Image 1 (cartoon, rainbow, N blue to C red):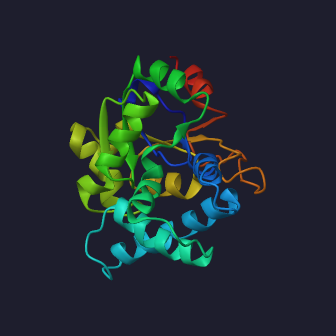
Image 2 (image 1 turned 60 degrees about the vertical axis):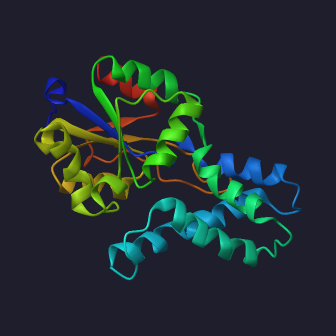
Length: 235
């Protein structure tokens, strides 16, 4: 079905991997710490615990727990796995907040500025509010509004997260669009009535892992980056 672009009012962005390079950012910071380990392997191991930790909250095994605290739980396990000892509590706390300091992809800021000229742009991230605000301040991300799973107390892919965008802006879901580099996220958004834009991020997991960036007819738009998406949307 052809999408009438004028019907779309709000673009909601997944953040980790779509807007910012979590893998490269974490690997660089860990390598710079001089711990004698592979920062890329460390970043991958840390991220591997992300979905299982959120699922514990989604299934009720844990009460509502924000991502900063879930990241710390995973980090303690990863530090033990890599046999990292001798870090002070302050150093561990600083490392845990590397997720607040993730670098944007090269096209991110310019692409968001173009998209913002025509649409309201916001986050729809599992990251907590302070994390997203600190990230935006550091990286110059020009959000109109920061929305987080923390607002809805539901992590994606719970329907409440996707439907929450329309409720916040008093719009039907069909006038909101999720922009993401993750097909499972987009499928869940579409299942809850949102429009969808797939943006390819082939290096999200570093150069050693293949990412599925194939075109999928289930999504309304397929773009190579935010600048390409802006052109397709007439910005």
